[in-house]
Image 1 (cartoon, one colour):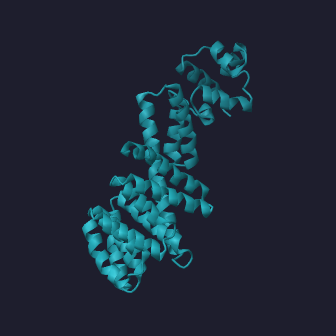
Image 2 (image 1 turned 180 degrees about the vertical axis):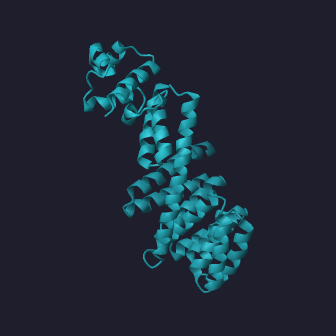
Image 3 (image 1 turned 180 degrees about the horizontal axis):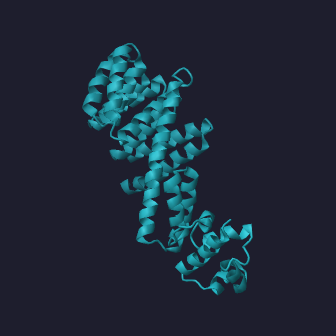
Length: 310
């Protein structure tokens, strides 16, 4: 180790923080003579003290040994520079945690706010790439492994592609899949779903009308029909579609969620309350305690409106 560089850095970082040797000594629970000896390269701090010194000077331990290292305003800024270099999620978490501490103290500068936004910006790119990679891996396993998970993976991948402004690619691919597999109800379901994700309700309606004639026993098509008719303001028809989907057998009481939400949106609060309550009971009976509690909370949120109506 180059003790001269190390000792010079100790002094440089201390002065950058406008701290005296006495103040540093107090922070590190040593005496001022010890700090002086470190800066004169007479003695060296022990290994366990190095992280404490680095934290005090808002640097990393590695910075103590570099000939050209910069003093940052705070430790969070230093960690953000590390993350920008490595793009390692663990470095992101360390940096984000340090910024959380600054937020609690109310000491965020404009540079801190910019850095905090930047690390999340970079992390969002990483998360998007990872999400797409693993959605593709789940989809590659095929519908035979677990159709519910497979269909959810395709739906959420399409939703993410929509957020990225690439839903047209998904729709084009799905149109081709329907052409290649015209007798596969699942492919038609996915096409209607893609149009719904894109909020192209007219196209969704056109495909739905053709698909439901081909596959009248598809609960997903019936459910999507409910969404489409709800958007068109044809609420009775939408409710009928949701009921039909329920009769055919949805995977997780989807029709109850949809109907309760619709009743709430159109001001049918008593029906919304009853539907959420019934949903909660069904979920509880199936052992889904957390989901049942959430449905119950939705019902309780509607309760005050029932009182207002009386």
